[in-house]
Image (tube, rainbow, N blue to C red; front, side, top):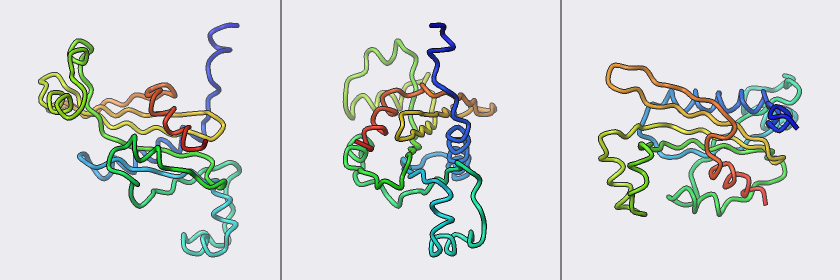
Length: 179
């Protein structure tokens, strides 16, 4: 097989909803807690009269295959790993997404970090750290999408990276919420 044949199929709908979520959380600015989203087929929302009316969608038709992100009120635990371990989605939820702010360090600085709160404190104080926002979305069927926004350095704009393999551990943790 060639490399192209081994690459995951592009999921334009999932990529679009990931970009929509990233735009939504970016509009809030920086320094926010992680946010969790259920991904629901838009037709499911439109076809439920009460839901459609509450969302102002009564009498509309959803584009085939479109997804709507539904932000969850709060995480079931303050730690993202613990929160995701407690989540089980109903069948109507065909995917989920999370947005979280992270700190990136140069590889040589990461190697020496201790685990736990001490490591976090050291990372936050490191002079070469880069603050970033990571948005990862997954579908029940295994497909994923991701966006990493690197906070701009003084006087510079943000950098944005896209890809389905930006955060393999987070993708796996999100998929585990469907087990």
